Image (cartoon, rainbow over all chains, first blue to last red):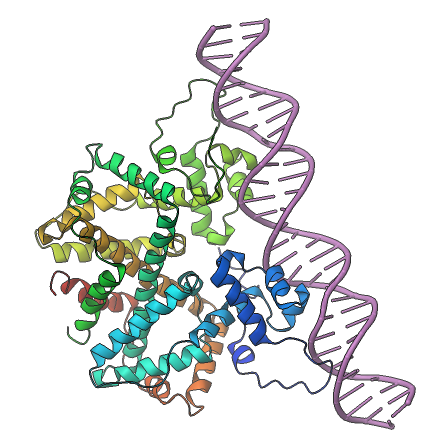
Length: 238
Length: 238
DNA sequence: CTCTATTCTCGTACAGTGTACGGAAAAGAA
DNA sequence: TTCTTTTCCGTACACTGTACGAGAATAGAG
């Protein structure tokens, strides 16, 4: 069916995007900058969520006309990529390996989690996005360094990075959704009532028991730590 | 009609949505059905991707006027929830426990992965979505049954379910993106060239080595199995 | 200096989105 | 019949991303 693939996907040639040495010596001087525009978009997403990031709002934030943004990013998809890489610059890149690579990797995962909680739009923006920018690559470099003692081959190391990020993003997304739900208590209550009703309909005995024997509530961080430890501790066995 | 409303969030009261026993005995008879509309939306997403699911296209597919859809779902967000639960109906719900709960859980995860590859829009639609419908709950019921021998408490079991789903979704999303990328070879080649260029810039020695010592390529399924085993095998320890 | 090429700026315009509104149509109830 | 409730859907509106192109600014050439 999908024979008409000739329409260019909005993603752009990485070369052009990330390693452009700013060649133009002629013509009008830029009034803004990719940095400033990206930062404005990030600020908007942090404050009002990803769906509040519209070209018009970003332009207003930066004091530019809407169409001026297109001199700095060819489309919105690219702007999202820029945003992701921009905040990736907050992640540490200096090598702090202790020799215990499992502990190092766990520490990195905790940093990633905190990072995503700080930018709640990040897990959603990350899904399906590729083309790592310089900041993302610097961070990847650090993870690869931590993985050196494992003796894994190249692709395996890259896969560990991808899986770890996906795992953290998945957990963070869940955690963020839960936090957002508990922010509007009537909706949370409605959902609880709904689940309780389902549990007592006779067709969901396991759910009924799970809800009636809740156990002590753990902090999200504790849950994260448990799963993370399980994932990493088994890493180079099997 | 909805007296309350007022506050925003388009998600709707679960009661109203999922357990409404078709109350209206008066008024005009519905010409379509929630089932048919949801199925049409799913067919659209399967064929052309999630972004092709617009109210107009769904309506056209089903032969209805656009605004007629709003008699069956109060907004598009709800329609997405309906879609997710609709395809969840494909997952098996009969208890096939073998007594080896780890093996059972792994089998379930493999089913989930296949399910998501069959509906590539599912991981994206799943992020941040809550309010499980009847099909999702039936599937949850089965997972809880499998987890019975673990002796975990209620919340722990529910968390295992959430984490497992997030993990599978994360992996599936990665796998889908990779497959889509390799479908347009020029873009894949451009990305490869970009990474190679970065690797040789002198600032990314680890990346350079990882790319130069690739190891034998594993199938996505094999990679999935490895990580899944690691995650599950450690499950009720520590 | 003027001329010309180049680059950025941004108002206008357009196709496409979700959905509010309200009238017309249908069907059971009174 | 008339009333009430429900569904159907054309029209309209606010908002999205972005194509187009005219005008402004800058740098080099003459």
